[in-house]
Image (tube, rainbow, N blue to C red; front, side, top):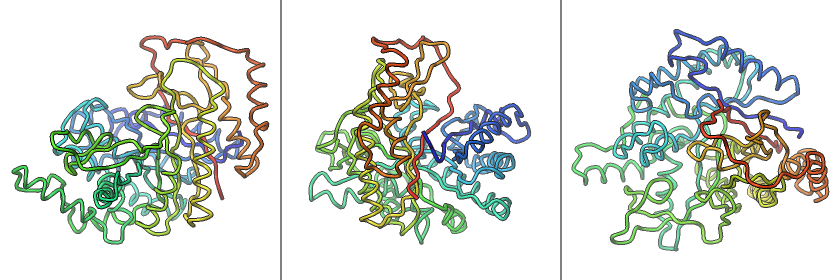
Length: 447
């Protein structure tokens, strides 16, 4: 495909089986070392995510992200990882989608660690993840940057929140701070600490519930300075745009960040002209990514932005190589990113398509397919075959342009179809099948 970089994640327990740095699994260390070497041999830059929701069981038993000691434990893990790979990795991502780890998991209670505790856990987790990220950043800064000079950030799940009506503008601003600001303002703002509007809201809401203190744990002055500025670029995973409005009388505000927020007494709805072409919870609205990029620039200044995920999953057990909808949506999203660069003067430094192959998509298992390459899970070799979207992105990369003729990728799709023979019908995933999945993505660099 001609990819310039390849994003994957390292499993914390695969390196440190107990979660602590007194025992290092050398086989795990070698696995990722070999992968990095193989990428570099093909002139593909490794972009390494240090944590993508794989928590060592022992540390989870001790409270996981709700235990303040995890800040130092994650720092110890980061130091081990840097010691092994800093000589070859120039782009690091510390913790993937903190809002999913904290808000979604604890509010809904069905993702790992399968604990439903929406009162305190999301906000304790929020603070500790920021401090853990900052600890990893400071360790790199002090011990490794003088020699290796990599760039470090963290990618959050960034949904664009828009007002449902003109009267909801202030609520939309609050919603953006609740979704994005709580994970970005402490790092990227000049002031540091929590977004003032959210800090005020959470104190008032908590007092109204009868608590003596805010459920949003405060930062000390030292912690504010420690976290502030701990990113060399801004990373975003973007999949959806939502409209926000006040919850109606008798209407439950829903679960943050999917359907609403009790703290905001607000409900989230689909953008009216979204395309429900992918996973049902992620309606597609390409214009949203341009608006989001502009908002980030307005909020945090002219910082480099790396789009670390953007993709489209089909809820199906069928295998279809000619993924026309996904190909078209990649086109539309890339057009909006290009407008963001050329018209809005946003410094977008790269785009990562999720994902290179079909994968084990958490609770959806193998029923949701994000891959630009098909994986035949019914075949013992797990055969990979490029879909039309893979050929399209390869054409874009070769041309360094979005202006590529249809035949560039359609002819290649037809050739693949002729080569392998058409596979029709539904292929059921074998019950109980599990693979130790490494998160992977394709890449397209703009400059």
